[in-house]
Amino acid sequence: MALVPRFTAQEVRRQIELEIARIEKVIIRNLFYLGEECRNNAIENKGYMDRTSNLKSSIGYIVVANGKVIGRKFETYAPTATKGELTGEALAHKIAEEYPTGYALIVVAGMNYAAKVESTERNVLRSAEVFAEAELPRMLKTLGIRQA
Image (cartoon, rainbow, N blue to C red; front, side):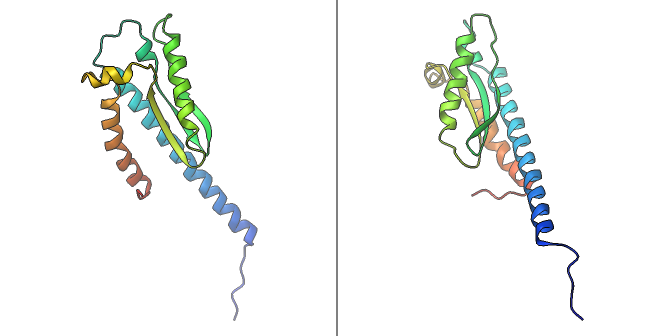
């Protein structure tokens, strides 16, 4: 008695593609969540005097999938702070060019003086970085993904 399949190779391929699409959605949704949490953390825990709102407006993130930016979050916090938002987003897009394959969450503080402020032990992105370093392994474990 021989086993006779009740499915075709095409049906198997289609099911695999559906599962890949489902996994990609979950990964992307988690990257957006992590980006939002990092951004909120950086803004809520800022350790600097926000005179122009440009630095705060330059803090944001983009999510990249296979070289394509699929979402962003930057916000202008004062009418005079559009420069911050534009500068932050431009920096994030420039960094995104380094990720032509796979997935990436890019969180930035785009003003050119952000690193100087951070070096004076005032929080700009450091608290967000610490949060992400703790949260990402937990998220990957929940998704059943091993870290390389």
